[in-house]
Amino acid sequence: MQFERLTEESIAALTPYFSAQTTRMSTYSGAYQFMWNRDLFSPDYAIVGRCLVFKGERGGQIYFFYPVSLTGDVGEELDAIAEIEKYCRAHYYKLHFLNVPEDRLCTLCRRYTSGMHVENVRTWDDYLYNAGDFKTFAGKKFSGQRNHVNKFYRAYPAAVFKKFEPGDEEKILAFLDEFQRTQFFKQDEVATREMDMVKKLVPNFTRFNQRCGYMEIDGKIVSVAAGEVCGDTLMEHVEKALREYEGVYPATAQAFARMFAVDGVNYINREDDAGDLGLRKSKLQYNPCAMVRKYSLEVDKPLKRVETPPTLRTERLRIAKIGERDKETYHALASDVERNRWWGYDYREDWEGEGTPDADYFLHIVRRDFRLRNEMALGIFLDNALIGEAVLHNFSYTGDAEVGARLLAAYEGHGYAREALRALSDYALSVLAVERVQAKCYKENARSRAMLEGAGMRFCGEDETFYYFYRTAAM
Image (cartoon, rainbow, N blue to C red; front, side, top):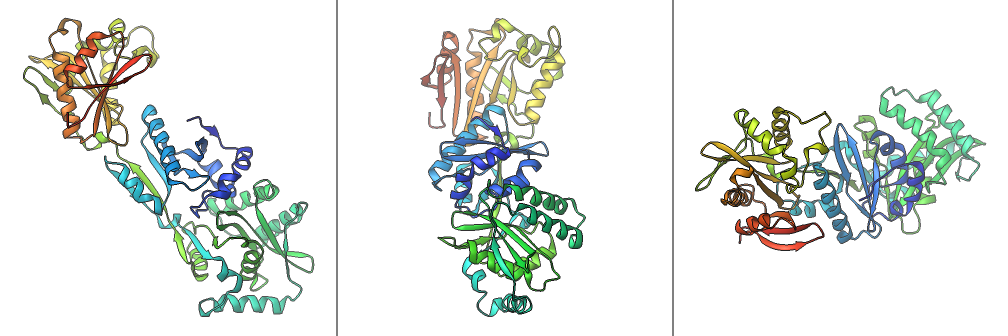
């Protein structure tokens, strides 16, 4: 996947994805991305097939939004998810999805076998309303709103709700300045930022395909509302009004719905309440038909349940943690550049110092990788002497893992690598319950191929560089 930085220009270019999305989440809309996601979470985006994928970072954690398909096709979304999994596997990222729609949650839960953490926080949820209810405010449950609207129009018979036209930006910004000056008393950072971003959104109404209208009384703007149509839902991003005009808020909400909730728009999303109890009360009083829930799903790494490296025993070997007393021997194994060209990794790719790193460096790498649960490197011991290394790494998120083994030159040719690899594969398939163990070797390395086949692995393919092998519990 090729990610690009999300900018004002790219938000505008992504409008077809926002307009077509069927999640009914405000998150997947142009104005939301502009006002909240672009600066707060520094996201990148990629187009995978016909899906839009967002990648962001917060608190040092990489996360991905659930993919949005142009057609709402679940198969296309799963194809995009598979590409995200490959991307995370290659970069050793933990797989973490945000904004998972409720109707997609079970699909993801069935997909991942290594465990996961699923979370929904009440303050994330959007409030969803029937558009028809807002157009009429009919029935007993809307009597309060209906009475306020009637009272407003009796008090202000000249009030008219007008559709935004290019050229109206300055007077809308002037209204927002008055709103902020006369009744904006919130001091918290989120509310202040929201007000700033609303002002920045105004010049971009047309660019981001926003629907906007304003209530005017005798030439004076007393309220503004703006949003965009995404699928069958009108996402309302902005609603500001001067409270001195009693009833102006429900009158604006109704006029906005009547003007823009048309042509197949059945719902209005009035976004979340951000944990503000006053805002929550107001949103609940409008009688939502549903809450649009947004789930976070974080997939566990298979090694998460391994607290300490295990000790495995075969007929001749012990496969166990590499300790302090083994670090000099391990240094000889890990720093042998010529032999390790068959290992597929050269320590000099990451080493930033001069010369060869000391023994503590290589031992630190082993411990760090296990602490992060990225891989598990175990020593291969013969009569308590370290003779090589067996590694379990490159875990997928759907049940695959890769194994490898290397020996000091003096111990090759005796079947030790084959024996150790078989034991580590057994451990992965049984204790970690991975579905498939994989391995590869350079095509020129005939000895390595023989070792893999001797360990019970089956040839499954090749490319220009490698032969590939696998093993399952049934083999």
